[in-house]
Image 1: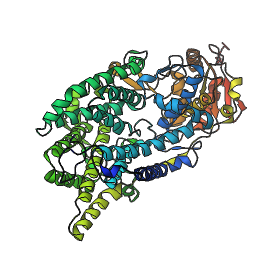
Image 2: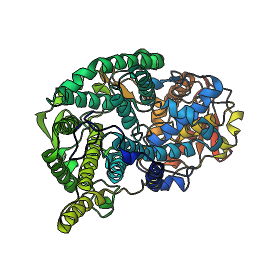
Image 3: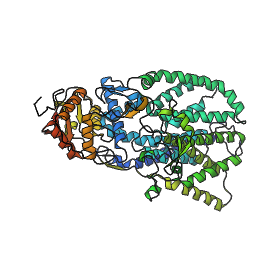
Image 4: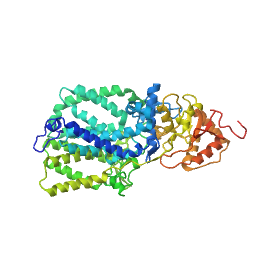
Length: 622
């Protein structure tokens, strides 16, 4: 198969396993690469490891709280036999369609013992670390198996793919997007579908992997499928590989049929819930025009890198968690040189593979620019292909900037191919060798990642940690922290996550951070539609707004509390904002004016609520 590595003097059809891969020493090499990847991943996440409970991701406490909530819900699901794809614990009384969100069900299930024993905070940083390390190691194994012969080349390409700027950026809270290992694992079995006599087995295995990938990173799985389609199409149409593709087509198509059946059986219910279940929606709650990659971003450096540490970072990303390209000019120049160098000496079959890889890169590069071309934050009126695609299923739910993550994988593959070529063909002069070393260093050293930023967050109050809350709410009753849980004020969702991880009696909360219906034209929106009372407390917390309240406000609050069936509200001594500080004193003043004097217990202020009765109007006592 011509996608397998071929040395310059070989044909395009070498054996799948080279002699260098055999022998007892191979596992030592794999172990060394795994240790390097795990060490680097631990370094990147070190700020969280120092204090998983007391520190959070500075740039994205909201998403961290959401994924911690999912991990806690995983324990609750197993302990209570709850639906993993629809929950009544959030957004009372309506609930949330988790299949339409990023539910990471495989992770929440596999890590439920750790979550139960150590808490969602520890499970979160563990998964985040293993995602980064596992991505680099999986790409290393993939490259070593299919594309290069030199271990150093595979290791360099794997480490770049696993720790590319976009994945370090997504390490700010995204357990789905840091799971970059899904792509090489799925691609591994895609390439094996053509093996004679094994199409049934490989089809079944790929179907299982598709189901796992959908559970962990559905959008990433879509990107992987799209990239596979582009690669196979270009490779199959190349004159040098056309006959090979035609001969393999029946086996591949049969295996894909098995994959579809297997994945369909495993995903029947989650797919139904995702596309047709209660409280689902079309599109996404995020603006696709905003979350598109600036063309100039490819030329800039990321903030969490050596270059960023030296003051060369950029502000072209939509936010710090979406620096999905940011490769820098030197790396892009090196990649262009790499393609030219590889193309010049490649056999026809190898050129077909190279053309297919580059085609994937170009397609995803253009897709990442979104509907309209933007250059240094200046949006032009030049329409791009995504404008025609953004209303199609799957494309309507994707954020264009994230297509650049596939470009990062393509760059990593090209770096591995170039390194393999240079090591397989020793350069004749010391000057030439030195020039290549300098080129690689100038391109890659500025991109070496720095640890993600962390900062203190409000500690779990004794009211929650010691179970005091059980004295204030019935089993499965509704309890809420003040301010109500949102993407910007996520503490209340964290407190619920920690109680779910401990099993036993639970409480539900109104609002929360999730994606649900309510956007324009049937699209999604972030969180619940605000009512008067939760908006009142949000303004107090986020803006420090303290408004004079009258009986009209109390009647409105009474109706809202009755709608949510809230039995008690509480205000911890410390509250944390996801992106900025919060005005706790304004929240306390507002709550006391609305509800009267609180009760202090377990490090919080508590107000009991009689649904339909409190708060009592003061003018006539009703």
